[in-house]
Length: 264
Image 1 (tube, helix red, strand yellow):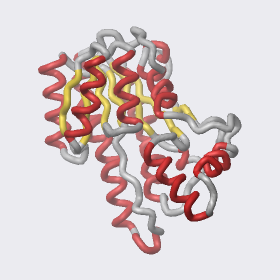
Image 2 (spheres, helix red, strand yellow):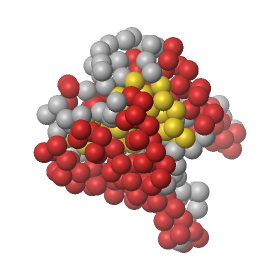
Image 3 (cartoon, helix red, strand yellow):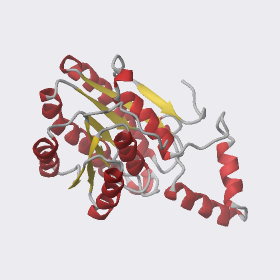
């Protein structure tokens, strides 16, 4: 989605979990729709790369190295957004932690606790920090990035799936609490997203099975109604809908973006 529009003209959007995949796509989609973007991630180098792309689209980019598990980092992000960009209208909670691909029997609660600390408590910490800024702006929109793993649980990713399911329920709770302030809270749950991580995984599977990466792609895409694995840009388009005024009457909902892998 390379075209420009004005769905977020005059808005300021915070995107957490900046990286080469979803974080970048989300940031550029917000910028193409007219928003200035606050970029948050633990690795500063990733922030500056994406910031340059945002600025090339004619929007302002504010890089704030942030560990969402740190209350001080979250507070500092909001302080800078308020001081330098005037406030916050949109928050896309994209930062996440995955299980280290070991079973619960081998890892136990400590492994899941680390995942929950980022995916639930870190995300909620950043969310709580931005609420006063949104209230001062007269409202806002928050989107939680969830996963197909909450619908179809994968072995060795139990902590990830459980944490994201908890976050979906938290989003509904926040929708109820924050609705009177004009703040909408929704969730987008993607399936397999094409990008560097998935391509690495397909290459690994292909080598193990003695087939090509394209055959692996065709096999997994064939599980979806559309025989397609969506791109980060396609997921970002769904997020844009939720944070724009086109969804002004929608809150507390989850939109599954999985090319028809799962219906509910």
